[in-house]
Each structure stands twice: as structure tokens, then as C-alpha cells.
Image 1 (cartoon, rainbow, N blue to C red):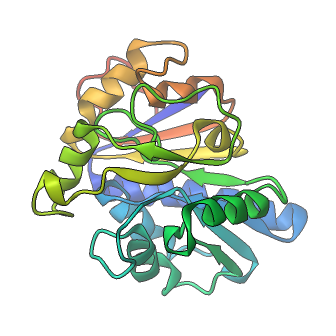
Image 2: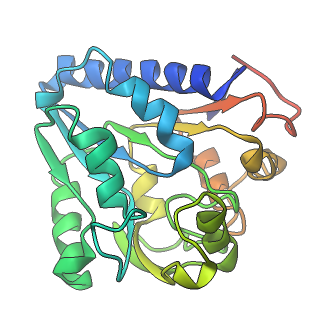
Length: 248
């Protein structure tokens, strides 16, 4: 079930999403002594991560995974998600453990190691963005809804690559890598609680597509969220502008 929360601005949306995320993390720590989380990246996550690092959380008891990374991109590149998370989150909170998607060690090895680590115990929280083409992680349409692998190699479609250029991560589409390691839709849905912060007008079409279908379809990867029992979708007024439902 998707619970929709619409806030006036991206900043207010990020604060609300972070507050709910922090609550989930604290509850997991209170119940089991630790928490395991998955973080996504991109411009849409800026306000949420900024608010989350200021939250009242014992980060030393938190283990972090992340969703995806380009293949063939140096970790020092400005568009690297390892760099993004290091600069925007990992360097600012004292996490208990961090597991990056690191193709530089070899794609097969990276997938094998991540799979073993992520499946040691359940994931309490997934902070999962939605792309302009409605992708989850780098699972572009039509997404693979059948695999039960934790991570796979995916080919990025043109719409996804164009988004990376529009957001300023790359100068031209030819500079955007064509392949990535991505957490699968199956593994994302294994998170006990999914919080999806999706601000900005550029995401309005994706949100409209999400609610245009009531059941999962690979052509709208984000529609997989309909199959999950505990999803909080946080929107600002711009990203919610094409939807007809509004709950908060």
C-alpha cells in the first residue's frame, strides 16, 4: 500500500521524509539493537539527506547499503554515486558499516559480495527515489520483475541517460555510461519499510504513471511499489501536480 504525503516545497518534503525515516531507524534500533538501510542518490534526494543527517539517530548502530553505480566510471568522478554518498552522507554521520556498489573491484565480485552482505539480515528501511522514466534504482522500463537476484547489470535507456545530463551530472549523453550495477526490483521490495522522496516538476509524469496503474507493470517500474505493504511516498506540490489523489 502506498501512502501519499504532499508538502508545499521540496525542502518541507525532505524534512518530512527524513523525519519518517529517522523514526523507522530508531524503531529498528530499539527492537533489535541495530538498523540496516538502503540509500538512493540523485538531485531528488538532496533535501531528504540534508535533513536526515541532522536527525536524532545513533548512527553507530546503522549499516548502510546503496542502490546502484555506473560501470566504468571512476569513483572520483563528479557523477559517481560512491562520491555522492561519501560527500553528502557517509562523511557526515558515524555509520556502523557502509557497503558501496563498487564495480572497480570487478562487476561479478562486486555483485557477489553485496549479495552476501545484504542477505545476512532484513533491510529495515529503503529510501528509494523514482526516476523521470519511473525507474527504481537503475531498473529502467521494461524492468526485470522476474529475477530474484539482489543486484544485476542493467543497460541504461536513453531517457535515463538524458535525465543525468539535464540534472548536470554529465555534459552530454555520450559521456553517460551505458551500463550499471543496480539493486533489483525484487531486492528493493524486500525492505521492510520503503520511503520514496520524489520532488520537482520533472517527476510529475512519473508520479502520474505510477497512479495510472493499480498493479505492477514492468513498463512503469515504480508501479512495483503497489505490491509492497508499507510505502510512504513523499511529494512536493510540483511532483504531485498531475495526480488526482492527495493524502497527508
